[in-house]
Length: 394
Image 1 (cartoon, rainbow, N blue to C red):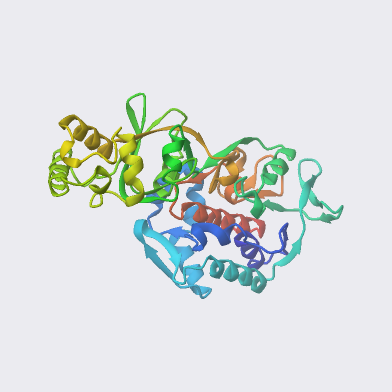
Image 2 (cartoon, rainbow, N blue to C red):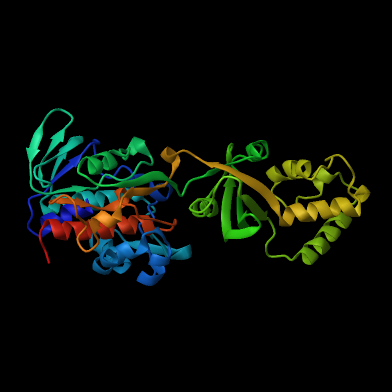
């Protein structure tokens, strides 16, 4: 929609082909339905949050910055707010407001919307001459922009078709893989017993062969298969099977401080069962699985705890370890990593280097970033730049 409206506003005749009944279905579910549409940070800070091919985005972000995105949507009547981590949301907390604003903008700019599923980009002498639709319709055109997303959340329409269209036109595609995705762990039974439990103010460290490859502090959640939540989604960009996830449930306390806290709590509840001695320390849903993890009987009395058992409790509070097994399927990923190789795309125009009249923008490209509004900004910036190029604005 950003690409189409930008091109139309600058004088191009634009037909937006949408396979769904309405535009923006994936946009409408982002940010848990709230739409984290950008991040209020500098360009340099933004690029630090891009995992793959950040330098490719330099021109796009220079042409349409995070500040431009904020000003753009507020000019369309969508007031915005900045939350933790510089994440930008609509004041209404409704992604639908963003979708509706973009739809109206397209209409106001003169974009013609047509429902249709493109199955083929027609070329002659390595130049675009038209598109073919699934119903057999052939439409003549001399320029096409592939802007149909990656392969995550295929129910919204982004099922990888853009990759197939690009390959048919001579482009190389870096194998798509899930990014910003929950992870399955070997300790599945433990996580299943905690399904739905969110932990805030938790520290996470991912380790491979004794070396830390990722660390963060924030929120995570247990699921029936393993772990998810903001920290896990961010970590997923570097996680590999077999890595160890170390959770510090009490990062604000040193081991010595936490041990003193345990001694104080255990003295307070010394005549209670262990199951009733952790109410001040852990969420109620976590207590029984945690005691089982420590090899402790919940009906044992607190005063009967040995020093060694207290050490086990302390160790698991400060270093609850899980083993990464596999990412969840790409259909469950927020973002697709991989995509059309950026080496074959001009970063100044988003134009194909191998097929005249072919352009790309958004997630179909081999560019992805951490969670926090960065991926939607990439879509807006590359869409804007492609729209200018389609209208031949220099």
